[in-house]
Amino acid sequence: MTKRAAAVRYARALFDVAVKEHANLEQIEAELAAFSDLFRQHATLDRVLLNPAVPAPRKRAAVAELTARLGLSPILAKLLTLLAERDRLLVLPDLLAVYRERLLDYRGVVRAEVTTTMPLATQQTDAIGRRLKEVTGRTVTVEERIDPAILGGVVTRIGSMVFDGSIARQLEKIRAKLVEG
Image (cartoon, rainbow, N blue to C red; front, top):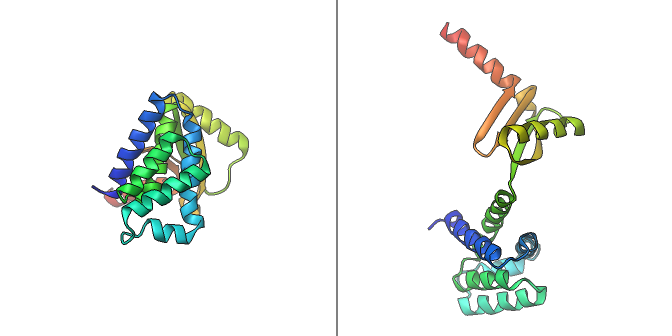
């Protein structure tokens, strides 16, 4: 099983149990993010807990101690201990990303990545968000990206859907028509 596939399974299980237990979903997300950040902040922790040469029982004990000291919710503590036991702590970054996706989906929120050549004014970003809400029927959070290569216009990506209104794309279409005709 790939790392991403394992992360999806664990994130789905964590989310489903949290919903069933009426846990605070945002709190679990914050705790999971904080635990994941520990690995980035402490290289020694990263080396020890992700090292296959370190026995799983030692990893399990270390993670149990960490989760207790951090005061993590029991649902998350149990999952992290299980991941340590199965030597799967490597999936943490992907697990966090998938959990966040599931949380947004559960809340009826969709992310839109809007690419322009220069930063948009707040009113423009809000207008794009409102229009995308009309199109998708869901609450939209707009993430801006700057890319001078599009030359102008806007490229919007929502999941696998792409709305390409960039000048670069329009020039590409004109060139294709000139070449074929």
